[in-house]
Image 1 (cartoon, rainbow over the protein chains, first blue to last red):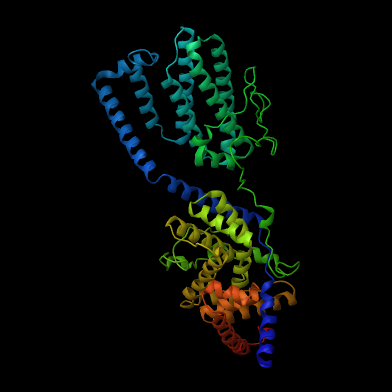
Image 2 (image 1 turned 120 degrees about the horizontal axis):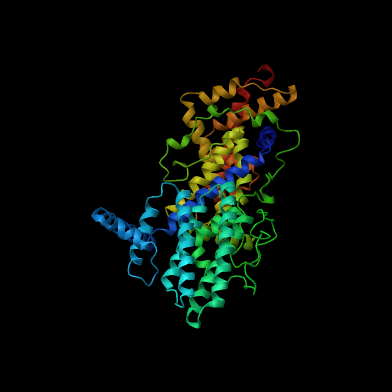
Length: 339
Length: 186
């Protein structure tokens, strides 16, 4: 028994030396975390898109294809003039359906997400102009117009949610200005509109405020914005947005006014926004600091060069290509290469 | 303790639905310790990062398949990490590529530090010559300071079996370490 104790003490002493590990590089750790969260987000999206969502998407795709084919056939049959003529039509006019169909087709042919987002913003502008023209003519804008406006803006935000931080920031600043303008337009229209037009205008106004709120969130915290857009903005939109003020374009924003530079102030906004907790996954949390249970990471124990000693090509040895992934010892993962 | 367990159950429940916030919390809770564990077994920052990334990627993949742990998440994650390390060494035993890399690796820096790193390399090599279960018992007990009961639960073994594995592992380790040359001769 004594031998066992002595043996254990001897081995323990040797093993204790392994506890002295080089502290983890916080930047590398943060990148690894971000990569895992990106995997988690796409897994979550894939999960959500199963079932009815998948069926709906298939149906939507088929519908888009039919519309595209019909409009192309129309164009080939000499309908180009008709389509051009339809561009000025309002929702209550006969060629309006051609106008919206041609818009849908034009979206299909945008060759990049940026171009598609730009086109969507143009279309949102068109919808607001249509509403303005109808109100000025003493008519009530159909719900269909408001719904298309909302659809354009949501699709724009979806496209933005795939952008890198810098690009996203720039795009959101632009969208913020545009939304503020729309909100201002909507408030002006509400003053001019008949009683019958008030519900659709009010609904559109609230929708714009919600979108503005999401954009503001994006300016303050891009990752939270992406999560919101990807994980259920539709749900959030049913929540009550911030109370509108009586003056135009006065929604609380991280931008002082629509001409200012974007100056997101961390912590300045975002509480009580009805958009749920802010996971802030881009930043390592305080408890992420390696805290070995028993004396790891001791000062001076590591060699700084250890962090750099493994060249990129030193680590081709990945066991994951051997295993099937059916249990936790195997399987291919998307393990991050951080060298 | 019960609160911690129920919190982990709740996290696991949300994670099984691929809830991003729950997954982030799990990552934040366990990745630092798993990184240290991988570092102790591998002695290489880049490999340790790969190991942690792969551990969580496999965890996520299991959840996507509707599998994954129902409880004892920590033990589950350590098992993946450990198996990744074992696989790494097993794969490269054939080519001895990893061992060569370690063997001929230079140890720059002060003499004391170099000696320490050589000793670390020796004990790691000895550890990797144990059977997988012996490795797990020794690593979890002496590197992570788990109790025999915790190890038994993690490995789905009895405490007696864990003690037996531990005893045989200690004897083997002693033999392996005695066979190794003194670090000063390196």
